[in-house]
Length: 469
Image 1 (cartoon, one colour):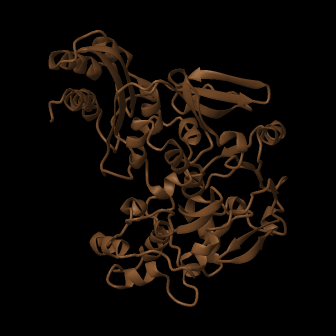
Image 2 (spheres, helix red, strand yellow):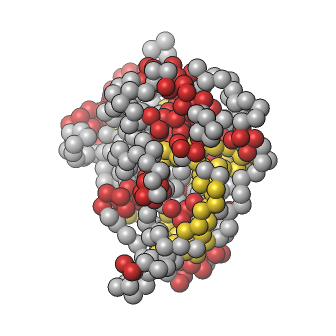
Image 3 (cartoon, helix red, strand yellow):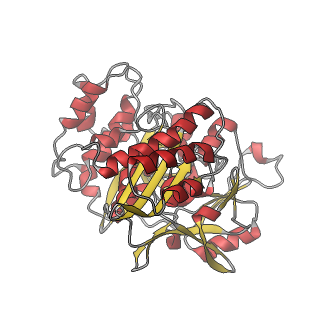
């Protein structure tokens, strides 16, 4: 059994399958303001608010209810769109009623995301990027934008604003097995959900359950659960393992805990790694980044994952950890095949290390059908240092052009030690087009991907040589 607070009231859970999403559970209880539009985190109609630690106080973060497993709420506090309206409508609801709501299907999700930004500490203007994960099917974004920007500051007696002045609840270790459900009678072992809070606890669990599914943010796994009906007898949530959530600067590198959410990373780095600062807004949406982790995105080993091209360009290493010890491997050697990595049984990514100092020239490019919140057709990270007009060092990380994320070593060799001019770039662009053999799929043809390799290199030259200026 576990409990959590829903709209200010304690709820106890004992019989629910641990694969159940928060969205499904809410709707079964009659809280139907949260909608299912896609079941994969694309539309935001299912958004709910989570209370998260923030210094000595707390913060409210909007997350996708469809990608949040119910046991992950244990000990936490969550609000739905219904809970925002206490004795009267919330200011975000009032603002949308003034013309920002059309068919109304998306409105509850927009209300929740608007509320998260409404309560953001230190907010001056409304950051519209907070709504990036919410989709309006009526294309009524202008009045929604107007409604968001009309919001002022919370009143002194606002209940949620007052709650943010106190710490979020501490999350304890969890071992949850549902009971009392006749549907488990035919199973030799009922499904089980663990949430350890330290690496020793985690390794003890994985030693006893070597086939357990490790889940960090759940933004990938819960899509499989929702749409492909994937199931695991044992799930282990690692998002509260303390050793995975550090961010440390040394003279040699910056070490980023693999369990930090991307939003936590963004706040912690404070723009000090410019390439990552440029990359964050292009990774899915704020709703997703509030749950997704860097380690999870790497470990899925998707050839179109957005973080590997950036980290390959930055020359990142991975710190791998198991019950027997730790060791580092270059990210460039980590991917061994399609969805395959060097990770051994019982081993996980503990942290990512980015070497310092950082090269002065860096860009991230993402080619996709939508400018934001989309899966890459081709992604590229480029980092370069010049010595005068000569290429002193360059790293090019790519996604979407091979079965794994890759470094463009031949293209780098064609540039290294050469003058940084258009002739050199055009020669290297031809090398880039021939270096990989991408496939045709519904996101783009092989010919298109090959063409992009050369064009992105030319774009990088234009932006770093002052040609565009």
